[in-house]
Image 1 (cartoon, rainbow, N blue to C red):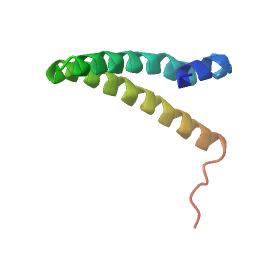
Image 2 (cartoon, helix red, strand yellow):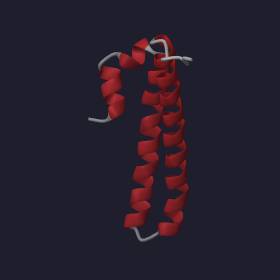
Image 3 (tube, rainbow, N blue to C red):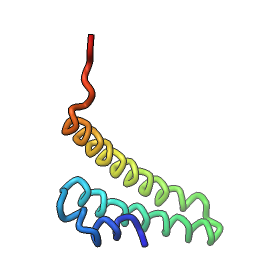
Image 4 (cartoon, rainbow, N blue to C red):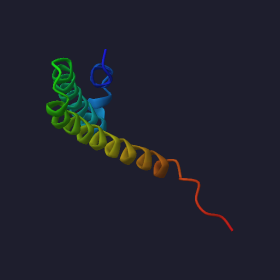
Length: 84
């Protein structure tokens, strides 16, 4: 079972728009990597580069959203603050 499926099945994606964005991004990245894998299996490493780059872009988008979630959670917990 993929992470995106777990986020959806457990209701996490439905309860939070950021998690929902991640749940939508990850299958796009996985599909691009499947395409790249097929091209590599066919012996076409050059043609696999485009799908690999698209997958990387999608994973970077998901990571950026996850960082937003982490920052938001840190702010909700008080963030520790700076002390003198």
